[in-house]
Image (tube, rainbow, N blue to C red; front, side, top):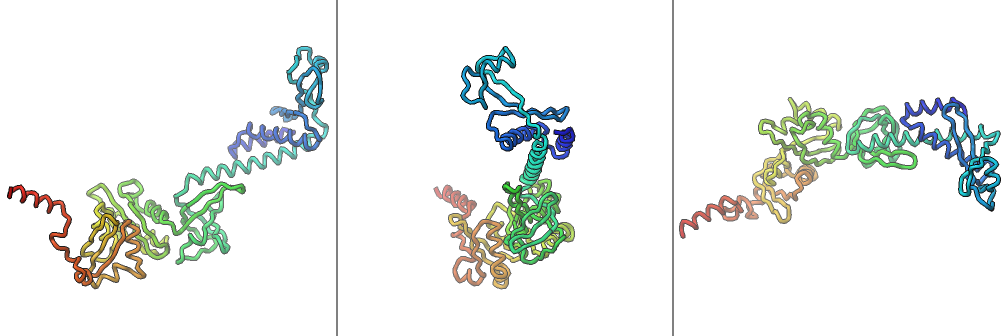
Length: 373
């Protein structure tokens, strides 16, 4: 084993972050296996590597016994004491058995082990780096594509963009720079495998965090996201600061902030609405840009009936029901939209005074009862 190998191990330790001791242990274990395989030996052996000189020796380890049954594993007391008079029964004696041609085999084996360990270490480093970035956004470069995937370079590794995660309104060409959302990082026998998406709602959320400082620092919070990638999305935002308009912060001056996100998503329309803990207000906001006359809430079924002006019915429902569908996803409430005329005919709008479940009304009736008594 040449000293050049030791120099190489030192360099690997610095560049790849692989401990030299780990590599030495791996090489020694591989050399034991190579010795047994190439020299048809089944005995108990140990390989000793001198880190200073780069030399390597093989030792057979034998137990001192009174009667020898297997000369490959045992040595008689007489033979052992010829080597060292202090040996006793049960001691282990080491005899050098380094073959003359073992240097070539050792060098080849060491090279294979080092190459394998470097590859494993690099894969481990890449996996550790990217597994911490799950649910995050990265910029990649399109490399190539096949019927199943588009391959996106993230620097150290290529990520897979499945066909189901590709936006229908955009085409991908080699060398295009795109932002992708890391959905899953898997450890496989061939190394880490990374799956990314352009349709995930998380991509929209991360883009807003990049473009809107108030979201990044936590002043404005994204409460929910509903997305039909490439077509239209809705996002609800809120803040605990009375002097900040959460919707205005996301839109930006002259719409600059939201426009940057629309451009990144190739023209996808984005509705930004203010979140509210009151389902009446939240559902009404979520149906933007349509005007809402009333929202009737059914807490038990987590459902709402929304009344809109006749001329706004199609706007509230949206093309192919998209606006209502996204509003339902955004709020988590079922939404049934009725025109003002239909609601009047059904007798649900305007609501009768005595049908309203209002706490203040109940309290006022309690006061009247007390006065009568």
